[in-house]
Image 1 (cartoon, one colour):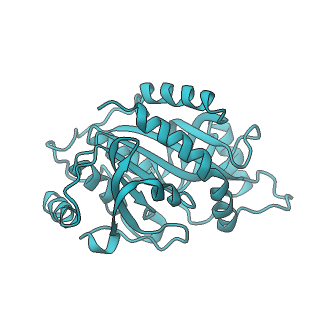
Image 2 (image 1 turned 90 degrees about the vertical axis):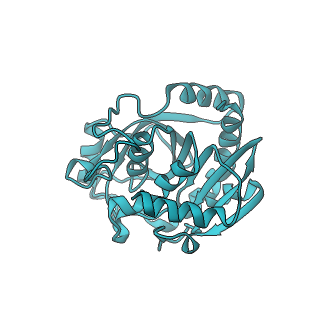
Image 3 (image 1 turned 60 degrees about the vertical axis):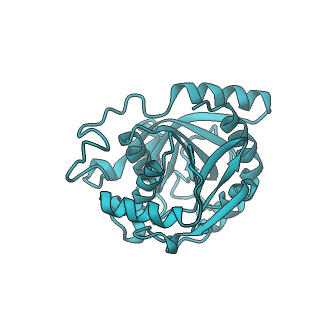
Length: 277
């Protein structure tokens, strides 16, 4: 692992000597936020050894390093997913690389379906906890040999999503009149969307939103001692009735992402300004 990380970091440093302190991960339809980074250096994923390439529409497939609100950031425009055939270790390799580049805080975003009838399309949900279904059945990026120099063998997750940063995000949302939900994200493997029965089950166990990413990256970030924030953009209302006329689809995810970009951009820029390293 260390040799692979060294090779990846060496390739990135051929493009820039900037040392990012904050990492950003943008999900489906949200990658345009990275276009606001000043003095950007764009690094195609295929230029970085071992970096998994995404085949999903709406994921640009490049790393952006530059300045945002006075902070040096590294942003992933798009991510690879478990359902694309990669292992958990492969899809979380980018997070390992960002940690090796020196980030201390990471903010992740995703597009998610809502299990909560109180939510609406276009809402932003801040994660305060998660349910990791792939991890429960043995698909966990922390499985296998552990490098104690990187992180602990057994990782506590009671304080997964940073309490201080969540408090700052709430205040920012209020001052900017951005409706901000806060809840639990359920991670499933995909690529199919959930059945109505599965959505009803997720509601029963407390999930507010459901998606196919993020949690695996969160585990690796916390394993490396990185502070974590994560947000879901609610792009569709997951159907819980077999007689419904509606059906979840990726086109809806991309279109709603366009509505979410301005809200996410305002919230993330203000939050980055508040992060003191």
